[in-house]
Image (cartoon, rainbow, N blue to C red; front, side):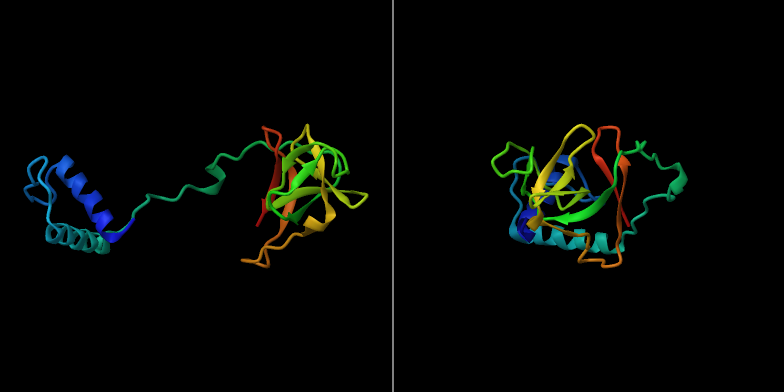
Length: 162
């Protein structure tokens, strides 16, 4: 949204919501001039600069709800996978597509005819072409690691990325 568009949105809020810092709002239906909108934007910018964001006390991590993770059978590792590539029901490009890949996937140790075994959820697995699979690597934070720790209550793989 452009600067003037933002000002117009603020003006609409001021008109509909009443006074701001004792100012008398324009009458309903009255159009504000460009100069009035710019002044309103300037005042808004000044208030934002003087405001301090207070989100309250941080919640201790031991009090944050942790979803239940269920064990998973077999050996699974995190891998980088090219996004939105087809995951096939069988290791064959002519078999039905059961899902599409995401950035990181839980990959099993089973490679068959140029395909990697992918865990979609606890009930469905499939195969993606090996050319789209590479070792886990986070470009923004190279020291980041990934581990498949199990499946969540909805059956999706739980990847611990830190």
